[in-house]
Length: 53
Image (tube, rainbow, N blue to C red; front, side, top):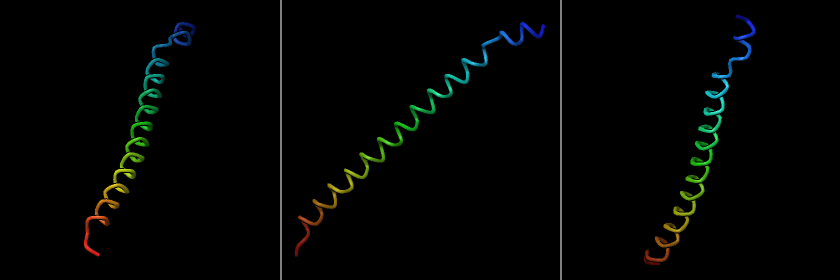
């Protein structure tokens, strides 16, 4: 029974899927932050260009 328990790898798949989801989440968050700051800079440039001096 102990040997069968030690050979059981079903929990390892859950951990692997969890790590994949965590990596994807970090990538999405990092990418959206970079895109968000780029859009913010572009909108600020447009706003300063349009506003009267």
